Image 1 (cartoon, rainbow, N blue to C red):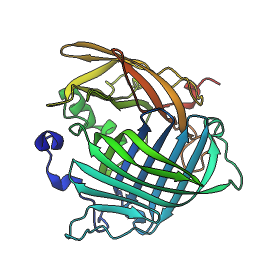
Image 2: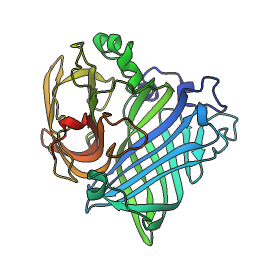
Image 3: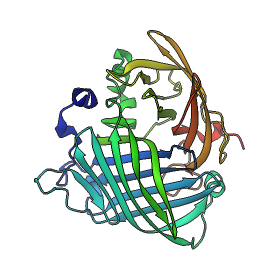
Image 4: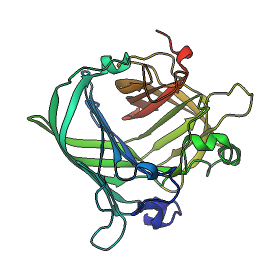
Length: 344
């Protein structure tokens, strides 16, 4: 089982950069998506350590509740020491947030304690900011147990590998992602709850450039039986060149089986919940059709952004309920489209 969970990758791939890389464009990132098994809330947690600004790592935290309340935290903090008691670079932390790799490709933890601003899914979908938002005390401790081999984009399809060797590969940077089950605790204000669910962990190390990015559709989920899926695809570009399209299905053991999306729920509108994100994957064994409906929108960006260009795709990060041949679960969905393709 241990070998299957590594997918043949070396354990060193899990370790973070302990020192600032020489190339200012290099970044080291740990990100996770989490969904409660009952669909009552979802979380997106991440640290981006960019060499150019190494003394202040970026922290992202979104906790989105199905009724529409969203905790949305964006700050930069001094990095925490990366080395653990064994001298291994297993810790990526900054300020109130800490990730740690306990067993490569098998077990990670995440913890947070700090004040975070509140907003709503409606405000985020409309690209609105709340002036002087209310702050709430947030604390969590999460234990993540990996449940499938990591997927390295470009590793399952020769065509996808060729495309990622060019400009489109810069959009995501060198990375892999791995599904997991999660348990832990979450406190928001005085309200405490147990965290029981599933999620997706993403590790990126390298250069990422987004100039020319046209949009994407990225979805993934782990089911109670151990089955899983994941895919990422870009829309056809204006130059007529083939667009990246790659994914997998997993039966709960063994290796990931290659797939590609043949029906894609491209982002056409922004809404807080209830958006259909059903899709069809094509595999060597036939088609896999999975129904999906978002239960909460976590974040939508670029409306009025002072950082991104005006024509940069609008990005929606959301959580969804999925149904595969009668089996249900919750999972992630991130989509983006150019602003003129978004219907009001």
